[in-house]
Image 1 (cartoon, rainbow, N blue to C red):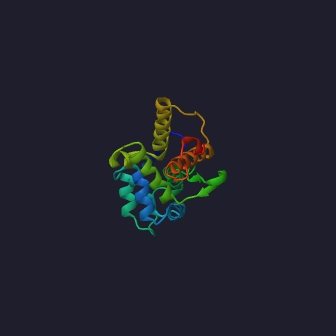
Image 2: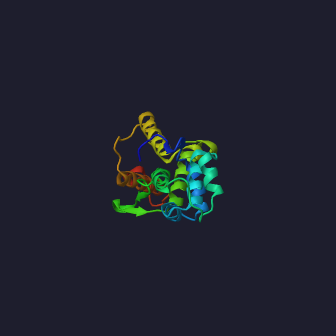
Image 3: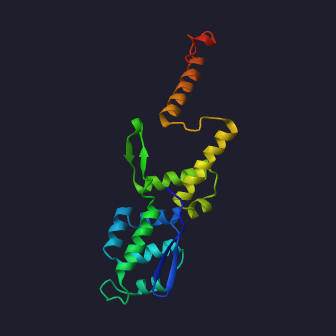
Length: 198
């Protein structure tokens, strides 16, 4: 996932800046019971879904969201929704972290995870690995969290040493090997360090 500037929706004379935060992603995913439902609602032109996404992205109501909230799904709109839908869909892609929702599992095979699982892992990274407060984690974008975690790993490697390009398999083997050595120390059959597996 690459870092990117906040999205901007321009409708008539109003320009609305949208920030794809982790908190906005969680709230929208829960409200619509999954990102797939939210994408479908936005793509089909649901005025309330468009308003919800814009409000979550900008963190406040605007003239556009007030207008969308006050109109009925059956009322004709003064603005064309096609332009709004395209811009909101582009924002949803950034919000969902669509290029990072695959996790590499065993044997290098990508396993699919839900958006809820993906965003939960991001929250754990931000608050656990990085030590950020919940407020900072909720306000960060998925790309910011992932880049900060990469920076943290690079810093730890620089301070404590380590290979620059560790593959997931090598790390797993090293951890498993270390665990085997530690377990062997408690084995009554091991009488000296030469008996500990390498």
